[in-house]
Length: 240
Ligand SMILES: Nc1ncnc2c1ncn2[C@@H]1O[C@H](COP(=O)(O)OP(=O)(O)OP(=O)(O)O)[C@@H](O)[C@H]1O
Ligand SMILES: [Mg+2]
Image (cartoon, rainbow, N blue to C red; front, side, top):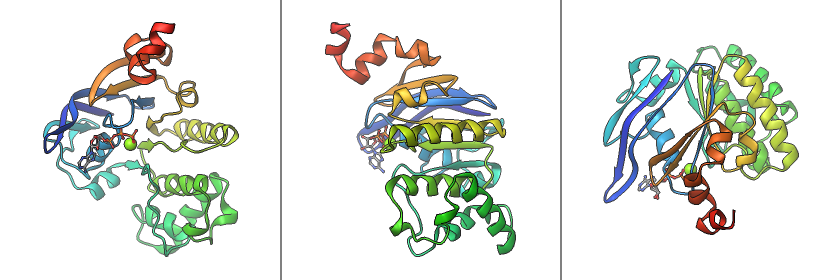
């Protein structure tokens, strides 16, 4: 479904992604993990078209989308959430989610029905008329997810939707993620809460300084010395 092929992204003298390649198969839930600043969000920006890679290509359903505009990628079925929520502050929850739905229809009424359905699915219908400024952090994360889901994606990229959630809220979010996947949507998930994503991901890709350092089942990568070192520090490995 998605092929990342030799992606390098340079910001001046800084190489944020360094010849990164991996694939995501249709129907999978793939985790993308790595320390702060390792290039995870940069990759999402490249997959969705906010950034153009310095070199390399992105293929989606077999098609080279490397230079296609972000809104066209959205129409093709790619949606993402932003790590730092980016609601439209003067619009209500329903109106924010409507914007996503307008990717599939130009009728406001139809878009509102689609948005209402998504908001209900995320258990926040009681907040539909709230402004983003009146929401809590976790609710803002859900709003991000709602707007992305309203575009009816085939491939959904989640950038740390579980950061800052309580264990109970994480469990709820994991259930939601599983349901989204069961409905036929492929997911690529960036998350720091390793314990949270390990049970839902079939495969995990680990990057460090923009390079892939490991790839495999959650079990395989969590036992990989390179991963433990990059994540928890050399001291942890030595103690083990
Ligand atoms: N627009 C930009 N201009 C310059 N440097 C950037 C830009 N975007 C990202 N970077 C740099 O690229 C590197 C990778 O950043 P990125 O945000 O992709 O990391 P990340 O893995 O998402 O980190 P985190 O876990 O903290 O969210 C960092 O060194 C960052 O400072
Ligand atoms: Mg990030």
